[in-house]
Every structure is written in structure tokens, then in C-alpha cells.
Length: 264
Image 1 (tube, helix red, strand yellow):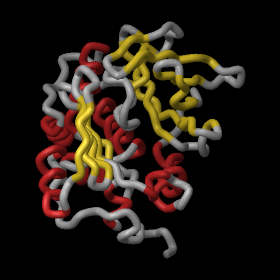
Image 2: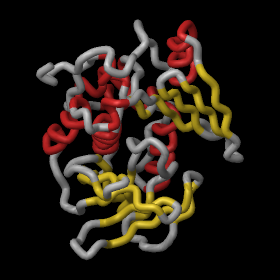
Image 3: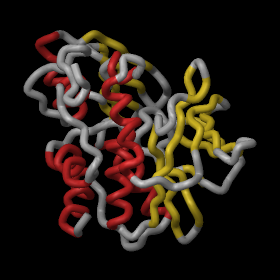
Image 4: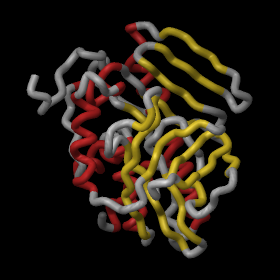
């Protein structure tokens, strides 16, 4: 990512170029990203291709002012951090579900090294920590998003817990970006993937979170108060535009379009 592309990305998330690639700047960038770039899976239901490469990501997230899911959001954020002077590792994780950890390369998270030590950064997991987590701490880490803890497993992996519940299991050996293509393909095509079975668009706000799931709009405040309402057909596109800054030509509908490359 060149200087012009990095500056455009920073403008997209409303952040200034940091004076140094340190922990304080990382925390500010992390929060700014979560508040401006939505976690969303709309491409799957709009028949849009998802390409894990720098220019397509920049075209989507910066140019079209869209969001994405973990492979896109953390992948793009890693590229930005690298352009700003951070050393970043791409790490695979398996998300915990009712039956335990999911498929290999189920999730992409980041280990970011700073002069004060390494951090776990993740702007692509939906509801999660607002700030990076201290990688080398095994103590509880309070965050506006909950109380987090990183635990070592007997196999040498790391479990990330929120409020005592395991969220995902991280492998510690870095991978290259192309390693995640199979997991991305599975999530956008498999009937077993929750991304193919539902619509989600969610963004952290200064007072809580706003989420549109299909036509259900949920807004939560800083005190945890939850407001839920059904959005009419005639206002769905306006909600995407006003709440998430996403301009669409049509409403995404689950199962409404086939994903390119699915073989269907």
C-alpha cells in the first residue's frame, strides 16, 4: 500500500496519520476502524465477488465505502498497519460454536508488534473488544466490549475469551494472506456457513452499536439498553445509507442471488 492509498484509507476511517507506529496509535486506529467500517456480509447476497487482494479490498472498503467480514476487514487493516510502519502477523483462528471450534481458517486475526510489546488486533469479528488486547498477558483485560482473557491451550494455541466464554482459538504461527482463500470461499458458499444463511450489517457507535439483520434494526446504548424495530421495505436502503454509509442499488436478500464461483 503506497502513501496515497494509506492516506485515503486513514481519511475513510477518520484517523490522522500517526507520528509513530506505537501502541497508543494502534488503539486509536482500531477504535476508529470499528466505528466507521461495518462488519457485513452483503456481498454474499448481492452476488458480488470477494477477492482477497489489496486493490479489490481498497476499492470496496475505501472507494465504495463498504465493509466486509473478517478476511476483508482484518486483511485490509493489516495492509494499512504495515504501510504505517507496524509489523503485523496474519493468524488463523477457529470460532467456537455449539459443537466447539469451527473449520480451519475460520477466522483471520492480527498480531501487531509495537515498541511496548505485541497486541491482538481484531476489527473483523463483529461484537468484540473495542481496543487491541495485550498479547502477552494472561490476566483479565477489561474493555468496553467486555472482560477479555487470553489462555494458552495444551497444543500451543491460544483461546480468546469474552466474559468467560471462548470466542475463538488462535494458532500462533503466521500465515500468508492467500492461505485464507479456502476459508473465505467456504464461508461465502457453504450452506453450513452462517454467512450464507443470514444477513448482517453492524457497526460500533460512540454510544453502543447499531445492527441491521435482514430487516430487523437493533440499536444498543452505552447502558446496554436495546431498541429493536422492523424496517419497512421502502426504508431498507435508506437505513443502510444513513446508519452505515452504504449506498446500494438493491436490497440484499438471503438466497436472492448466487455467489460467483459457487458452481450453482
